[in-house]
Image (cartoon, helix red, strand yellow):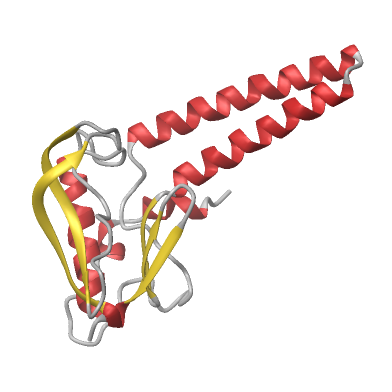
Length: 188
């Protein structure tokens, strides 16, 4: 069963744009409207998602027991909570940076922002204090920053200490190169 949110399971060469002048990224011509994540979800993100899905299974089991016991309103509440936990888990896996022909999409837990490639002036890596796993604690690390033409800068896309790259510096470098390459290719 193909899982569209795990699009980085392909080779890195497919995700990074071609270096030739007018050649679009590999795999680009097969589905032009498809959004791709230039990296795999990290172990922290996948682990938290697995724990949320485990919690949802316990809640669903509790809903079944409550329904068999005869309290349908209580079972309905448990079912609604389980559905919310499942939706949150799926959304958590989708959080991150997505690239496509139309632009750069920054997906967060409750929102998503798409910036067309025409508005992107630069994508660069900066060394700055970053949040450790999204928590209030900050550490010195690297972040991918997008500068926009005539607009406010986009929020930091990914960091070296985020849920996808903590303890995976090579994956962070590959993802940064891929995002920079897509930006360079489509800004032309």
